[in-house]
Amino acid sequence: MSEKNREGKRTARERMAIEREKQKAAERRRRTLIVGASVVCVLGLAAVIGVIAANAGKDDDGDSAGPVVAPSGAQGEDSLAIPVGEEDAPSTLVVWEDFRCPACKSFEDAYRSTIHELTDAGQLRVEYRLATIIDGNMGGTGSQNAANAAACAQDAGKFVEYHDVLYTNQPAETDDAFAENSKLFELAAKVDGLDTPAFRTCVEEGTHNGWVAKSNEAFRSGGFTGTPTVLLDGKNIYQDQSMTPQKLKEQVQEAAKG
Image (cartoon, rainbow, N blue to C red; front, side, top):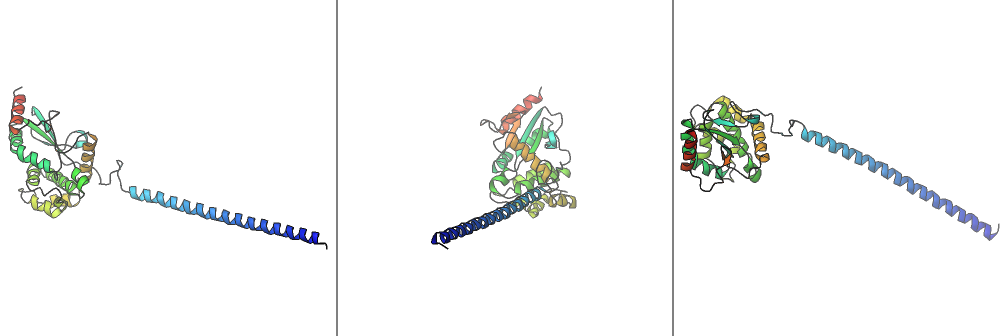
């Protein structure tokens, strides 16, 4: 066989070997892609399962705080207001508040006696609406737990008394003491007839947590800038730097004259 023929056969064999290596490489890539796609599918399925699990138990509003159970006597849209005072009082004061909020305590300390005087006289009706912004800002659950406990006190007909006790004994803003049921029970003992098994169960089970969450959502969607937000017949009096308890009293009494 001539040298030329031998060289031709060798070249052909080399080309065939190279082609076989290319085919093997292509097969390896194909298998890699299949495996990779399978992994992606598995991860995608796991992600879907994770989302489903994360949302399990949430109500239709996407809130995992539990069912919305309004306290006894709550009124207004979605029953989010706890009313105090006569239904037909000439003036209405809406108070958005957070039991962990220091500014809310300052407002309560300054205006409490005046508000009680006006509600007792049938001249003012107050709608208390609860928010949990300090929990969101500082962390913890004290705002929520105290609001739930106040709603439990409303069930027992002791809202005003417990409301005032919570503010009188408000811890420092950074101290999440209201997150502890033991603290809420300790303060309930200061209100005659409140510290009962029914109240304790309501607090321990977070019966009104869903309602509190819904109220806080209403606060956030209401365009308010912070707590307290205090509206007298729709006018924000907390932003009025000239407002005083005496001025509030005069305005309410003037409205009562008709």
